[in-house]
Length: 330
Ligand SMILES: NC(=O)c1ccc[n+]([C@@H]2O[C@H](COP(=O)([O-])OP(=O)(O)OC[C@H]3O[C@@H](n4cnc5c(N)ncnc54)[C@H](OP(=O)(O)O)[C@@H]3O)[C@@H](O)[C@H]2O)c1
Image: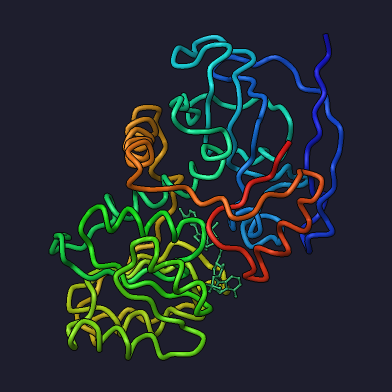
């Protein structure tokens, strides 16, 4: 029996109008692979970087790195998944914007019953990112309950998960966001303070809040627009974690600036360095499943679009119209 799927593809990089739906045949999984039928698909800012060509991939490219659904077939050598399992993933290669796909099983995890398909699709890439940021991207002096950290774009998908998780860890997360309404949302989700960085000087406010000391860590996914001032928010030996470029990539800088601002540390992190083995993926996912199942972290799905409206979904994400997570429905 032949299986077909709708897939969102681009033939060349560019605007949202370059995405189109095509019909493809889907085969059987080979060794180390599974076939998964999606119930929901996650939308991420990284999909925009791939579509616009900021992150380079060979063309044509099927988009999407996050999804949840039911395992339909299992290839040789896959022992952690079985036909009929509910499952969710954040994974390479891209291609989750589809009904059904064959993909490597390594990053696909069984989804606990307490977590819905939509939550699974929304939270794997963003939640595993929050996990490694808060648990594995630590300053040399460590992070203790009560410590201040600064988290940019805190009302977004990764941001709202990080606000709640930081509160659960006892951290005082200072949120930034682009409107007063988004600041309210960050506060309602566990941020200790919130700064509208479109109307306030966030570095001055951070120094105010921390009584001139600065924060131990800045988590910066905005990039170009926030980089310079973020360095001014750190206390000596503080850690600048750059993990995205929503406003554009960070320009080259002279390392001497790090000495001048207090012997700072800088790291550029990506989830895909953290989930290179099945064991590591599963242990990070177990940690995420635990905070979601316990209710400490709620997955806010604030936007839903049918797969065929993916262009609008991208446009809204890029125009900063979204909050929390967005899913594509099939
Ligand atoms: N390295 C990794 O491992 C990794 C993994 C996942 C995500 N990320 C990064 O983390 C960030 C958040 O991802 P997400 O999918 O959850 O997206 P998101 O936070 O829901 O959306 C991006 C947000 O960035 C802010 N932003 C600031 N300047 C912007 C600009 N010029 N254009 C568009 N948005 C701008 C907007 O919030 P305001 O309106 O509040 O400014 C916007 O809502 C992205 O930069 C993403 O690439 C990195």
